[in-house]
Amino acid sequence: MWRPAERIKYAAEPGRWPTREEAKQSLLFQPLALGRNGQCRLNERTWVPAMVPWRATEDGIVTPDILDWYRRFAQGRPGAIVVEATGIRDIPSGPLLRIGHDRFLPGLRTLTETVRKASGGYTRLFIQIIDFLSIRRRPKRERYLNEFLRIQPYHIDKINVSQSVPEAKIRAALVDMSDDELIEVLDEREWEALQYGARERVTDTELAHIRDLPRKLPGLFADAAGRAREAGFDGVELHYAHAYTMASFLSSLNTREDGYGGSLEGRVRLPVEVFEAVRDRVGDDYVVGCRMLTEDCLNGGMETDEAAFFASRLAAQGMDFISLSRGGKFEDAKQPKVGWAAYPYTGPSGYECMPSYYSDAKGPFGRNLQPAGQVRAAIRSAGLDTPTVAVGGLHNFEQAERVLADGEGDIAGLARQALADPDWFEKVRSGRGDEVRLCLYTNYCEALDQRHRQVTCELWDRENLQEKGIAMSRDGKRRLVAPRWKK
Image (cartoon, helix red, strand yellow):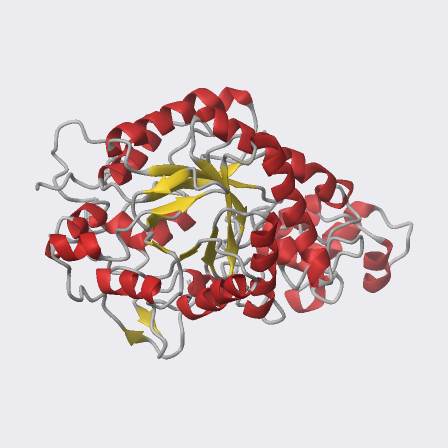
């Protein structure tokens, strides 16, 4: 992952933990009603954002390890848990959950039942539903030039050979070129495909399936949301964030000329249409929110004033909550190794999404709070009271309480801290915050995610490995869930 040049080392601070009575009176542990009619009551304003644990089957089916993962978070009884990004298409996508067909419903029903039982009905459960475009692994140089590259007339012209020369000889000539020579022959996207792996963009409207995204996606999201309701989830979170399809429509880099790009109105058009289709499918009495960015954190990308416009528009359409993240884009991702795919959290924008304990003068904690507050203020200025979820390096009670008191969010989201200690919520609520295991922010978990390995935390994954009945990682070296809190 990219690191700031300053390399200042930070450590998470516990701050002052509240007593049981102070926690009870705090803003953080007050209820909040979600939904048009307030039909979905959060028992407190704490939130575990979506995190991909790499525990589904290769076919996207819920596994016992998935159930263990969410059960363990539910035992800490946060206000809400959002299940990992779950694909809306019925296509292979590796060990990521899917919801693009009715055959996924039995496992998803078991998941909702597991969380309700583990939390005693206290925790609300939402599922994040996502679409993503094709991205290929970085190929070997010779294989790309011999198999994947489509030879075009401009290639032949640039290497100055006759059109009658056999294609095999043209390819052999390309293979023999130095990189300095080859970069002059390939176009920008071909060079990128060689160096990073081919990646589709929402602006590739010369491709029929990309051109048709505005026609296809509303129905796919609506079908997925309908299944989520049938499976027993309390609501859905539409994934409009980071490097994926819907965020790419919102981005300033979206230059589509078909009414779905360019202007602010054009860029928000499909996100609105997706929401409307989902709302029509699930009805007014079901929670539909979204995850979006406060800014792309890219040169020429979406900035916070644009995000504020989009969030206000989505809130006006009736979005029930808006969870705010930042960065995490492909455009500035680090070059992957051969055989690996680009990972959108390895560049500067990825750092803004998941900053580590080595940081710049701004530090790694709360980098997203000021822009999140700006987005929330725009929603309020529009006369709307849509709740927002603020995230970004929150780990102690005072931070989370300040987010609510200062109007930076209505709900405090803890991701890496909840992974480090799933009992954070129960410990703080009961006046035993001094027993919290604080996240180190080394991004050990993120490194596992990048390699598509089962995500765990270094603070507990080697602890008490002889415990009876615990599930272990595929390599047999790590436990997959945190030990239970001995109250």
